Amino acid sequence: SQQGEEDPQALSIQEGENATMNCSYKTSINNLQWYRQNSGRGLVHLILIRSNEREKHSGRLRVTLDTSKKSSSLLITASRAADTASYFCATDQGAQKLVFGQGTRLTINP
Amino acid sequence: ETGVTQTPRHLVMGMTNKKSLKCEQHLGHNAMYWYKQSAKKPLELMFVYNFKEQTENNSVPSRFSPECPNSSHLFLHLHTLQPEDSALYLCASSQAVVAGAETQYFGPGTRLLVL
Image (cartoon, rainbow over the protein chains, first blue to last red):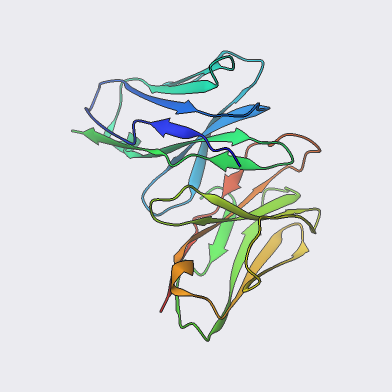
């Protein structure tokens, strides 16, 4: 099955800066979701954007979706040390199948 | 963490052992999932259950045997595993929908080491 691919694989920034992560995919989707995972723990859902939406906000998170380019971006503004985690995009392949990318490892330096 | 619990959190087993992983969700959902997360690989969907019925088996070897006695509980029975089965096993739940995938809520995972 096709998988989302996050870019970059790793990102290190200073606290207070903005972090941008990108996700590309190859098939048509119903929706795209972003999840966060702290080291060795379960995934936490951040935001879901449907295929007919272009942008969505949740607190310090901003997600965009460009279905023509089959890409999405996650922007975290005013980053904090607690944002250090791995971030995954997941594409809805239909029939309740979420296909995850390999993730972006984000490190926020104090 | 999010209404989905998993036990045990850590498990070490030999290749001849039989063990079971347990997942319980307190969210009133009717779909449950098993995922495998290995180092440096994307999260892999293993099984999907809707209203206690298995609706997806993603070509998982028979040494992994799922069981869903009701919509709140999901088990993964393990027997004669291989060292390459060592991974973090994650359970998730969601509302069941006919088409599309809704938000999934994950448990903290079971870290499995097969010796």
